[in-house]
Amino acid sequence: MAKNRELSQVGSLVTVNDSSGAVGIANSVGINTTAPTGSFALDVHGSANITGTLNIAGAPPASQGDATALAIALG
Image (spheres, rainbow, N blue to C red):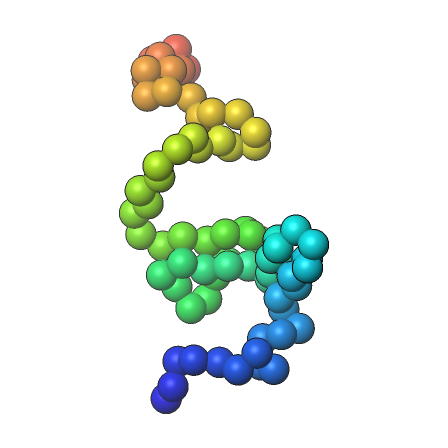
């Protein structure tokens, strides 16, 4: 079975802003999965390599030391 799709098959799920070039996808996006979890906008199965800044809810995640200190404090 061919893995390519015609725009007519997915066009209702994709929006493009002609002035900014921004692309929107109506449903979840899955990477390395054909069945992304619907409650997440992005569902990645496997490892990720990120070059740049990772933010979670607009802020950098806690460092490993912070997580270890929290675990010790909570017992």
